Image (tube, rainbow over all chains, first blue to last red; front, side, top):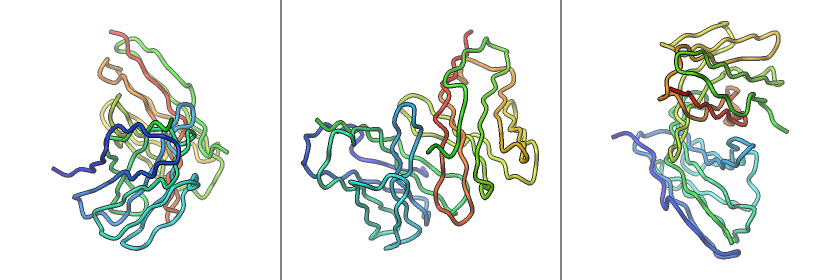
Length: 112
Length: 112
């Protein structure tokens, strides 16, 4: 089944404790992105990747890191999480730079 | 600054009625306008999309109306059904920009 998977789905952590949210797609898509969804703000892009080893900042990159060492994986790293990073995070992939994006099921992160 | 403005924030419609959600944008370089549907606990999924070279696109009960001069576009759901109850996001993208800008979302409730 063609899909984007994220792990974990739920995570509660404390301020400053490094964490990684994994994202994997099995559709051989070149483009991948991370978004955060907050009430009243919609979805905002954090980082995107156009191919292996090629990444760039989106609208809200502060406090986040990404890497793209393999085409199928695009992990999101929070080196020192803070409470304002409490949010619902989505990974997405796309075969083209403009067009349908396929979203994962989301990761709900709470930073205490 | 919100690149895409969406209204209303919430909408309640009787079964069989027409649901209308509106969006507006400022950046005339946007050339792809999708609508995403999101059910609770799920990631957004593409519902329908339009390019600015056409003024209307219809897929089943869902229609996008696009007004390039007014920089507005809207989603019409005909014969609304309880199964349409979800959050709808409009979005805008620009070829080569690698950044999909979302509206703030509309929570639609269709009452049986």
